[in-house]
Amino acid sequence: MSMDQRVAELREERRRKYFVRGVAFAIASGICYGMYTGTLTLAETQGVWGEWFAGTEWGAGNPALSAFVITFVLAALAAGLNDIFSGIWSLAVCAKNRQLGDFWKTVKTRPGRIMILCAVIGGPLATIAYIIGLNSATAAGNPGVIVPIAALNCAIGAILGRVFFKQELNAHKIVGIIICLCTGALIGGTSFAALGPEALLGCAFAFIAAFGWGFEGCVAGFGTILIDYRIGIAIRQVTAGVLELLVMFPLLAIIGGEAACIPDLAAAALTSPALLIFVLSGFFAMPAYSFWYKGNSMCGAALGMACNGMYAFWGPFFIWLIMGVLNIGGMAADYPPLAPIQWIGALIMVVGIFCIAVDPASLFRKKNQEA
Image (cartoon, rainbow, N blue to C red; front, top):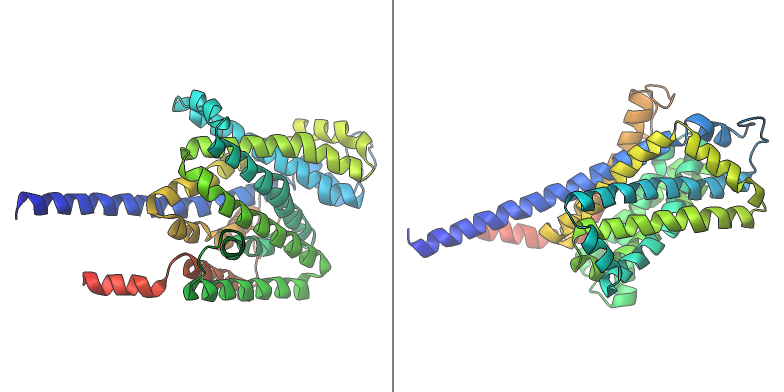
């Protein structure tokens, strides 16, 4: 074997290992997203949060909260706590890697401003809608049903990319979109039939979250390719957390005519033991996004998106594991986040997401050529 052949083999082996590591990062991001969803759902059942959502008196004889506050204001508060802790974890990682100086410099650049725009779309819009969906489905008895609906962001992102950025929409993407939309309708329809209108409300807000995250994915394409993934996630999460806590939380309370309750709600949330669980959910939210950015840069955005989209399965799984099997949230051991047909639908949706991201025919052709 010549030296050139040996060098070519070593280069190809290195490329393959790099690609495999990228896929591992992308898969890990989906798993972390499932753990973030599970711990966030748990946090909102503990301490004063459980009293709020139960619609009973709380604290020192405070009256029960209105339906508007429970549905919208608490969602903004929960989103803000989760994302601000995620931002703090992200800044700690930047500090560990001596990147805080780069963080402040990047904020002032055009890619940094694009990341801030992504945070505006993905935070106050998508994340709050996602938590409203979780809370509504939890009230119906099954928070896991909305997670696969939110995972439609991959299909919606492909459609929005075509509409706004004239990106190509090949046959395999169209097939994947149809699969995702059909399974989403299956999961949502089954939920409505079994759980009632609360589940339908949850699925509707999960779809809004999917739209926001899909649009965020389109916009983020430019910004993230020019920014280190650790810095990118720090910008996104800090911005989202500040906007949710300092803007959306009080704004929604004012809209609902409950401005007087803002200090009491904030104080109760910050002194509740459940705050430690929000710290944990923020910890998992950090790699959920940062590993996605890292995986996309190593194995390609398309395949990275497909691997990350497996949270359609991981989200319900970890809700069931944490709140059911481990019984941490007071649920029964046989607590089912999804009916059997919905589990099947979630797995089929993962296939649809994979079809959007990667052309299966090209993979088979490449495999046959290598053989």
